[in-house]
Amino acid sequence: MTLPIILDMDPGIDDAAAIAIAVNNPDFEVRLLTSVAGNVSVDKTTTNELKLLEFFERTDIPVAMGAKQPLKKAYQDAANIHGVSGMEGYDFPPVTTPVDQRDAVSAMVDVLTAAAAPMTIVATGSYTNIANLLTQHPEVKVKIDRFVLMGGSISGGNVSSVAEFNVFTDPDAAKIVFEAGVPIVMIGLDVTLKALISPAAMAKLATLNASGKMLSSLLHSYQDEEAGGKPMHDVNTLFYLLHPEKFTLERYQIDVVTEGPAIGATVADTQNRWSNGRTNADVAVAVDAGYFENWFLASVAKMR
Image (cartoon, rainbow, N blue to C red; front, side):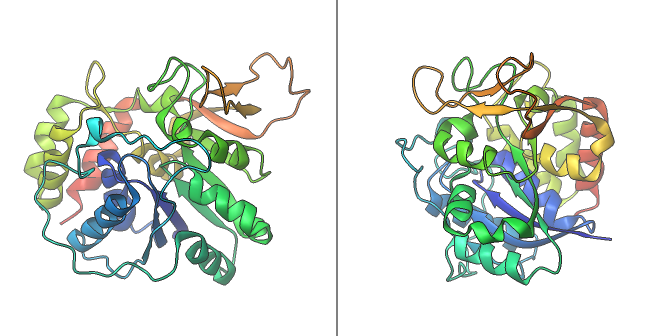
């Protein structure tokens, strides 16, 4: 049985790998792909989504352009990590597929309203589109089964000592999402900095097929690196949906800091000092990293 999902993304090299998994795995039915300003500007993230759908011959999936900037905070991209285009390292042909005429929020409302059952929304960029959806169309909350979010951290950040990039990019949107009352699975740096693609795996990736060669080329341009390999932050959301047993989750109340030196921090009440027993998110704190790497290679091996 397939899982219908909406993907809200900002490709971005690790987003590109996540899209590759989502549109090629028969266990997923991607009903909509939306873009948001994050790793690079929204015109570029939209084009990158279209490039990938054309590469994988999945132009049946609509792409709707989303927010150009955060709700309040000044926009700062991550072109230093992903390159000026957001997907440096591989020469994609010019895009010929048109973007959907609906904006991201309108498209999400249409897809959710038409769904026979509540859907999962996977968000791997800033959460601006999701926050706009919740505030402008609160009636669709009942059509959302859960958010699976790449973002946040309860152990330290990657753009400051406490803040992860997606939440830092639009902390006001993140606060709206975490306080919306919709079930949340938070796949943050606590696990994504452990689930790495090693240099040996990257070398193998390039030999698998055309998809592996494309992804390997992107990863070689990816300037996000940890000891032992390159983190595949966004891919972990899909890995979780397929293999939740490979993660350890802990239930916490998450509060998002929206101003001051800790802006963008996702604070977990790990000692139950201020939440009074309330919780709003299942937070991933451990992952089977070895299984992840093998699963990723096996997944790409099944592509064209």
